[in-house]
Length: 134
Image 1 (cartoon, rainbow, N blue to C red):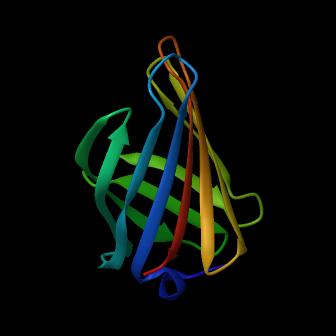
Image 2: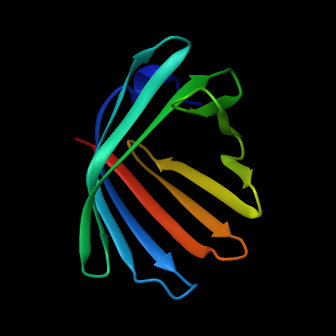
Image 3: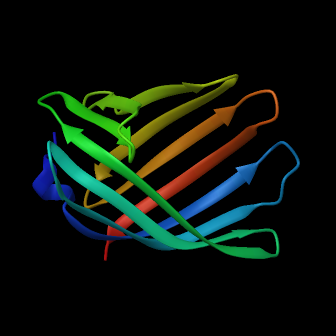
């Protein structure tokens, strides 16, 4: 079990995007920062997203709320995103007709990762992300 103090601070991010629905392969390289926020930590990431030959700036923001058994993750506007328990580190997020499944791995701490499997009528891709202290 981890707490906010273990996550707080700067991280380097490497993300691979495997699109099985015919889109180009993708990569994201950037940074993330966890900072104290009411009830937990604010998460903000920024970096360069490459899809095929196109490169663009990309950002994401979430709020992580830590409990004794796991973490609740919220979008930056306060809507619930997903929650995971430390003992399984997996979650599901339905979004319309699409389904997002994540499995976190904290076994090589302070390096950690998440694998998202996304499926839906027009979506079929995997996101593999690794965080390392920056």
